[in-house]
Image (cartoon, rainbow, N blue to C red; front, side, top):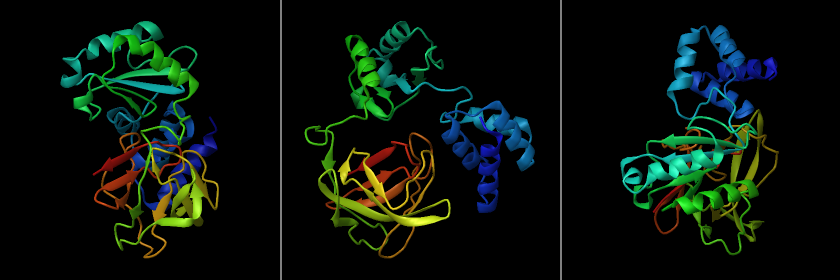
Length: 277
């Protein structure tokens, strides 16, 4: 790790008046975990005790003190999943990966975790891999799930994947449609908004296919960067109160035509998204 990266992150949030959690989120976004050296520098430069910084870093599930693997597997251990065979699913992952929950395989390919709830009790036993949900999992599927993860779960066909479907959205403040028929992504009119990050300000187009992560922007947004989204018509910031289930950042809400709200994470590279109908 480069010490100047942590210094820059702390300085940026000090100017913006953000708190400790925002600083730690950016550090983890940069390194994939919270290095000990970074925690010590945060404590020193913010005037907090190392105990306080460590306490926050270990309290929130989204933070990790050790490097995680390329793929994060979460097996639900909640009551609904437990009674449907969740412990057996977790045991199968443990056996095939050779690691316990909270550990990472020696090749840094997989990190295995068990969580109290994944918010999909009716689909138990539930497993998520890199944010992708696998419902009603059976032991025989574990090998296939691992193979799919290695092949790349993000590689999806927008043409025939039934999990993807178009949504038409509008600004939650002025209700103006955010669909641009002059900009196409995945062969469909894109969602066009304004984004601001690192002293840059320009347009951003998102795929209108719910579940697709294709984007196009005026300025390249670095991985892990937290961007701010604005309506191009009323210029209001698109900011909601729901936290991202992946990184705990505040989600960006947009109204779905026909009734409902779609929320996406504003952190580049995070795949957190929620659809309420």
